[in-house]
Image 1 (cartoon, rainbow over the protein chains, first blue to last red):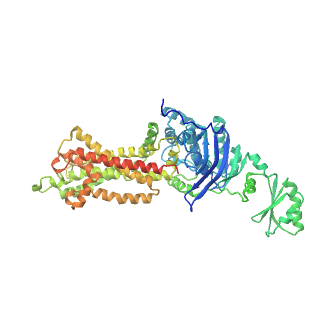
Image 2 (cartoon, chains in turn green, purple; image 1 turned 135 degrees about the vertical axis):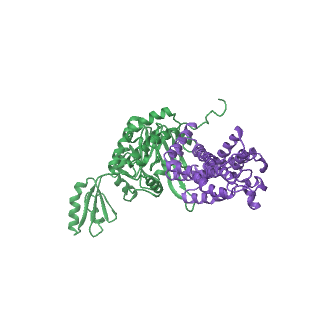
Length: 351
Length: 274
């Protein structure tokens, strides 16, 4: 092998990281209609880690996953997956990663087993090897009783599990999950988390998942990057992020919408007040201790209160603190609309 | 490459096999043409006036024989019309996106429907031939009379002509499937192309009955080229054709090479990483 087989000299392995993202930027379209989906984001994921991208729809989560899985080219910046550059070594990256899409990509006319076998074939697996692996996966995902039914008869939760199985059919080192529980009810979501936890325990796979469900990120991820408008606004373990708030928040809503900032700020123990949508948020060390003085002060000033609420540190609060906006877990987006409609045409839908 | 292609061909087969309406209709449409259109026109137009010999049907002994061989080219065309529609639906359903995310070579993503659809077209095409011959033996029906033994070489030429024609049309319509994003525009294009391809050929009537400019277009129509090969081999009527069957077959290969090339380029562009 004298010619062509010598690998081009590359700078020393960019990282011991499973995923390393440096100053990644993505602009869709040309000016003046250009849309900036990602604006200079950087983060690293360690091997075996579960890393979450948390943010509202349109924050840039799917774009990030699309770049890391070689489906979209970055405009600027670099992304290294398992030591390989996603633009220059795309095909090799595709061999090493697994991916579950936001909306099921299974063929509704084929059975779950057939879908998995086709997926295994597309990964270059031999038939004998793929048969065993598919049987194992169907069992692991508790799909065995439905394995030989067409996927168009599957429920939403079964489709999500099948999509996950397709993503790991070739036992990838790194797994990307784009909104893995989108459209599931809370019970289905919690059930799905168990599958992911078991998968991590059994395989040690590195996991990068995007979600707009705060609880999902909190439950599944060791570290989280909060993404908003194409930027990472904070990064850390869920505990670290919550600690940034530095205490509880008492949320006060007056019935008449009166201005309370000055009144609340004057109460000893209140560390700061912000107003949002007719509510006043008083930060303090312990909310329980602050409710009585706040209620008393308002009563003295003759202000009637509609509600008083103690909020413990949560990712909602972190998001609000960092972006100045309340977090909304909206469902669906334009991109998945066609796919969902087509899914219904195939007799499925969310069940 | 072969495992990936094998997996995708299996998917094509399973989708086809699970859709009996599709299978039945693709077989019934040509059969209905033979019986409804073929019997009516076949009995009406019948034979050439004796003074013209066999010239008016290009060597075929009667109109039905002429027409039923032409139907083979027509079947290859109609069978390919929908191949691109599946690509549009696969794109909408995210199935293509999933395929693109795997290490499978991109070429396999459009080679699999191309190969499968082209082979599938052989079945109804040869069903038409068989049925047309059978009709000749049923009282009250006109049928296909083969007047020359094609021999082994002729049989191979016939098979190759139908397969290559089918390959060409499937490549053409798959290209539109990859290039277009919604079913409405796709079916608009199909509807637009279907008519001239069929009527600017010698499938339904001899080109001698057309004005000169139409005749010259019809002569290069791949449907005509395919049917020329079949008529030459089944009626042995070399006197009515300018070239031997091999030349028409060569022309057909050239058309197919062109359109498969176009399909590869269009497919590659459509699957390019944005």
